[in-house]
Length: 238
Image (cartoon, rainbow, N blue to C red; front, side):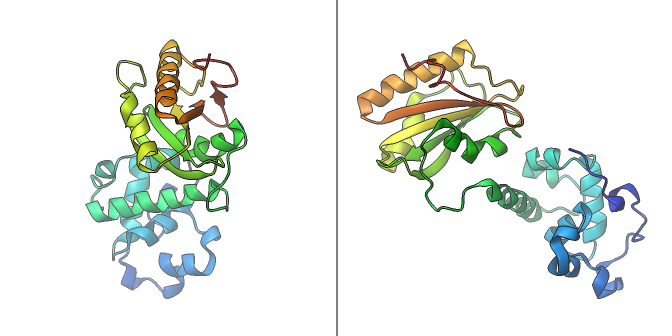
């Protein structure tokens, strides 16, 4: 989504000043401390970036991604640090801040229990729907189907020739998980399972039986709120 951030549209509003020349009430950090929800994207990013040129750099960064917060989230830290004034450390700090915001979508419980495909989708759907490549993540569950961890094990093309099944189960074995739920994204936005998705699912289910680790489901994540439970459709689980 794009932003109507007035500071992005009118870069001269602050006149590109150094931070020390601004009254305290106009400095991004102060404005965030007083009313973060009322700050625009330029101010929020400037507070994360820091330094005397934080407003100018924030404007340049948003302009680089056309004010699109989704594109900013998807960008690799090296893309962020390509903007003048953004160091590698600052780029990582920006990525961390964006990901912290996404965690608000997680349940408040420290270890939520998974009782349905919708419960599992709620943990991964929002963030994975933003990804530009296919990513495969594994939800590790204990005997009561409570989440131990969510681990990314692969990104690229999710097909039987590419995905190493051993890598899918490696974190489950390390954490002594009783069950797993696999989730992967479809950057096209269409969560309809492909023949490769079915083949990978079947291989994962069979390997899990040998390891005595149940594969409860394989979720395919599309854009927005679209996702598919392959278990519900009987794909790869028969």
